[in-house]
Image (cartoon, rainbow, N blue to C red; front, side, top):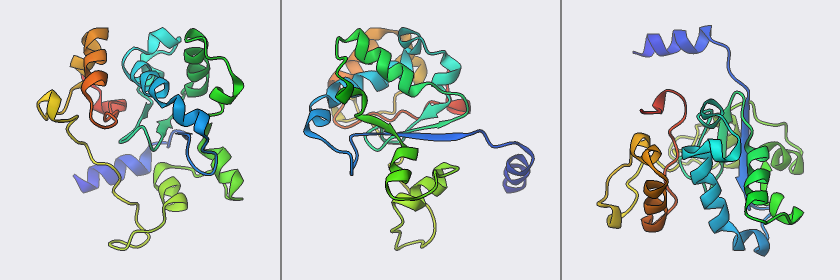
Length: 190
């Protein structure tokens, strides 16, 4: 398996990487904290019902996140900022300060006079370099996890999530923590 993975990674072009952060330091504001529920709803729409935001399923699947509170990570063509702006428009929340709550990792890098990271590993090492267990390696961020006890402690497959708006609302209503949005690419089901 290691040889196949290595050959695949060496022979295929890497797609462009972009990251987006919501209300993260040093750009954190109280106004953005107050609209976190809207951001959580945006993420659910972007991942499960992207057509509501004029986003194709392919572009939606180019993005994912082990923990949406920490960011959205995309490879290839995506339209996160356009979708965020559209979501805010649809919800009559057109204040430019709300749009600024979601910002690119490139903006964060620029703030710290760093180059924009070319990939997820470089992004994590640049901004979260402390890893005492394996120095110089990427921290093992939020692993796949259950949604919470009220949902019977199970991982929720995207096929169920995609079945209906009611399923998405149920999941959002009972989630204890942020849901695991790692349905992108080959991990997508259904």
